[in-house]
Image 1: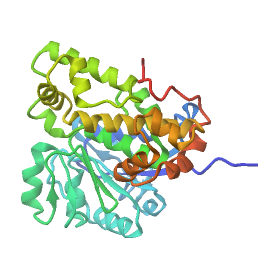
Image 2: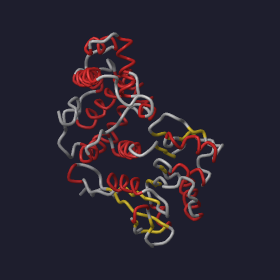
Image 3: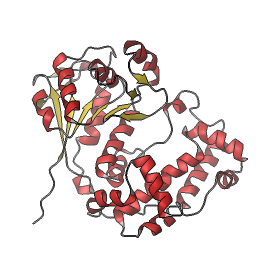
Image 4: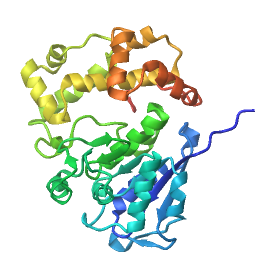
Length: 338
């Protein structure tokens, strides 16, 4: 008789000065039981140097349920951001993070949590991201770290960092998607009323927060909906621009301002997401999956999976299909709520 797999063990590292928002994001993604919706079981533990309340801003506190001795059991370690980004983490926390990384445990920092990982020396020589307003400070305090200005999140050497605030949600959902598949991440996103994944960079929230006119916004929303429902067709930028009633150059400029990415990159993200759902929920042969999602051939689909997901479509199906089919399958080419 088959037995349920052990819950995925997640550690939330806590010490005075961590941000309540990041703690809430981690708790909402990893600390809520959604097994009735086909999401795997998670075991979230709040870990600290001692089992005493950890103060946070606004009169809040976090009560740990494990000490740092639990970290060797964790499958994933999460480090929240800081209210004061130069807050020194306790040396036992830094040492525990170093030992966890040496064991090969994935570690993810939200927003200013990158400063904690940098204090531990884990980011030296690595590419990282933090909130756009903290980029210069992180560079100045930790010159051995390569700070990227524009990503929503970055992985380098099994260490993940995320840009500010809402990008922490993006990273947590991406970590779920990486470990448990696209449908598990989508189920959590639906319950949180957020997008399963966002494309683009944090630069879109600095320089171009909205398209220039409401008319442009409506046209771009319409063309994105059209593209999602016609992924099986060989869509080109000129086709999407014509649907939006714009020239190709104008369309590309407005699209990048609204989404932070190019039309072709966005379209590729939609194709990959649709292929992931078909691989999880159907037994369709690979050529048919490629045809339905607009890749044209299995070879092309395999190349894009290798580039974006560091795996192959067959390996992805083998990893995630069995679990996903325990729950009803949505239409993979129909956006949530449509």
